[in-house]
Image (cartoon, rainbow, N blue to C red; front, side):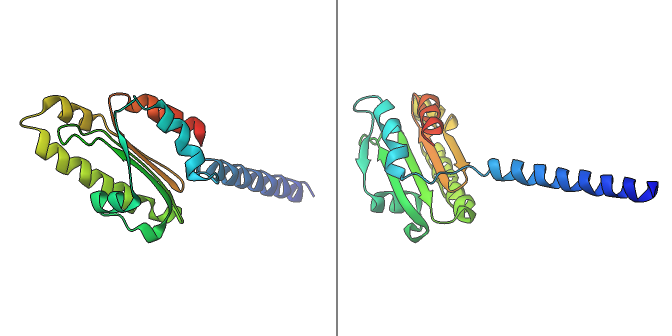
Length: 159
């Protein structure tokens, strides 16, 4: 009888542990169910005035080689001055499984620009080195800016 009692307790402990791990994994999935415009609005407000201008989804697709059929929405801002590398890209994906593909495309863009600016624009190269690329579930955030940390904090709070 004692043997059965210990087996029952062991099974309960394992089941409890499995439930805890599942809850932990689900809570870390990230992403958002909000509309991207709702998430991006405070980030856009936090940008320095005149630093970047809004670009179209087609501009984002061309610049980053993105497959827009995998996205729900895209917010893309960049500086019109060719000598300024400031950019902000926020993408909400239809499927979080595609996040690594988008993250890789952004990293290719950053590396290409680093190679371009390395020898003649050290300030811009430094900004590129401090770029932020983060994936949170179905949402991808990328920013190269003087205040990229601040914009990322605003983004996290908006999720």
